[in-house]
Image (cartoon, rainbow, N blue to C red; front, side, top):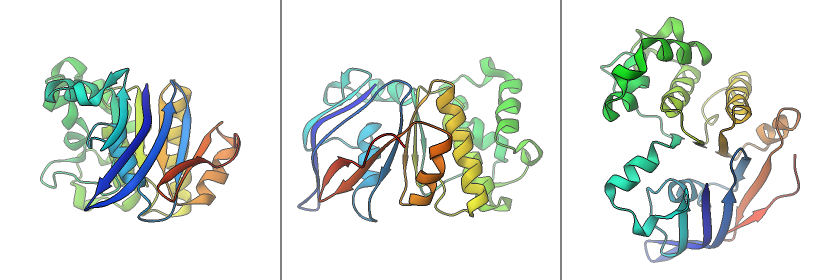
Length: 225
């Protein structure tokens, strides 16, 4: 589904990532870890076409990103849901409208109907907060809203960048459970995190692989959790 082959990425005159080869198979669950500044966010951006590699090949659903035009990338992005580290919402719109924004932008809001949105908001535990504005949400509510927005287009892949970075442990567990549920629905999941406790907590819930960025390269950090 997503494949990086001998990928390198340079920024500001220096090489941030080098000789990266990673394949995310359908239905797989991966964690990506490493110290701050190691390039976790950059690697995620390469995985959904927001950045182009300076060397090597990135293939999204068997299409090399270098051969894609803007419309092609937009269509592929509908198949990949992204939970960004710095969650951004339109503060003047209610939470429900923010979550539905990808549908609105793609012109699919009418065909999806309100029932799917209500069901999704119930799944992330935000049904009672549908009319709230983003500044009124807690950190955990913002993260759950971000996850709902990322999956409202029914993507095949979900990429989450430090989704538990600004929430307490109980909320981290709740978010992890939601991501595991997505994986059990057949979604491919990749979570970038520096929280090794979260990775250890996943052991009882999901079979996962751990990738670690070190010295500009990705290493397999052990067998299945």
